[in-house]
Length: 471
Image (cartoon, rainbow, N blue to C red; front, side, top):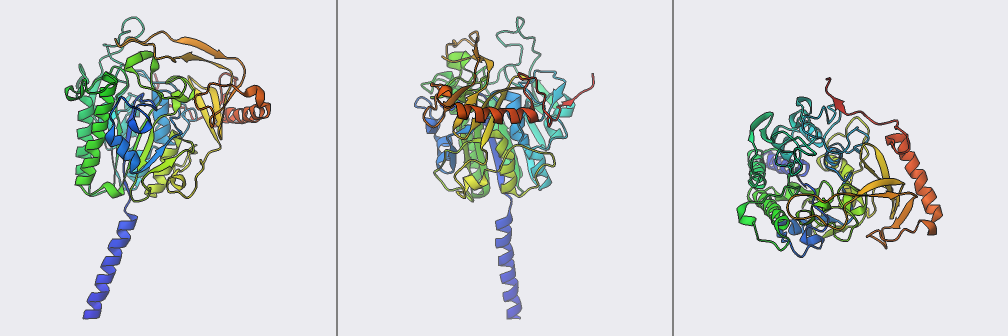
């Protein structure tokens, strides 16, 4: 009998080891709203304390050249969840309440891929991909939703209500049910964090995906009383400090449940800071401009990922990456299928694990407005094609919640910047490198034939229209 029991013991031990190796990782994706590159200590901020997020970066990987796909809410979020340039899937700008369009049900989201793998999936925060029934989170792979359907400034208390906007009340939702009208938002960061932690605790026996898109620090700014007047950056700093505390609570819950080793935690922002709100906006650091522009400050934001089982601590990644890359990255880590429809992203796993040290992309494309191609990054060169843009530079806004007027600027001829030696984009060197301008201009033409560019009159061939409701 002894050999039999010995065989069973060996088999059981081997099965346990095997199962441990193939256990899919838990995933927590924390997304802030309008947070700039220069708003974390690890990225150079000296007037905001962010010890938990800084530690997250130290224990994992930190990108110095990570790009939000678009410098605006809905488009950026769509690309994160689908792995596509938002122009490919027909999503532009930021949806207003009552929009007749939203994320096409034919697109495959991260949540849907993971759900097929047996994950529990929950979103706690801001959705902003359509507020009609067809487009709500549980139609796109999420088991649970607790949060708001669009930006936190789209409410009757907007300073331009009645003159520019006519927003309805903003409601807090539980799945498809509105719970109550929001009159104050100071409780939201804590409430969303608590819901995320509850979800983790309830689903700790199976793999889970937590998507935590905070409504903050998008204006109007709100922080809980305990965080008010704690930071040198004023109310904006208080808001970021509370978000940092939220990250700390989530990391502590993972440790308490013994889940930290096999849990991926991602922290990033949907676009750069909304500089027209002055002291109520974040900082793009050394980078030019902010949200609503395709200059580096509009796209280049913090990008942090920790996964102790796969990613070495203190991993610094200077190769560029973009929001389109999260879906294929998480799909590879979780060993899921890829979407049936074509996507634009590429897995960052080889880069994160040290197998390679270069970006999986030679080119990144920067679109804005309805479908305007504004810039192309080719390796370390960035070419801006002719277009107009709203300048937000200078942080001239006041602290009373009112934005300063935009200044319209125009780029009349292609301009070129060397991002290796001129990260602040101060020196146009197009005249010195006509061959590079010509090369990248051809690359721009190639993407126009795929995704289009309304400035050139090219509609594109592979654009998938957004889902629509019949009027």
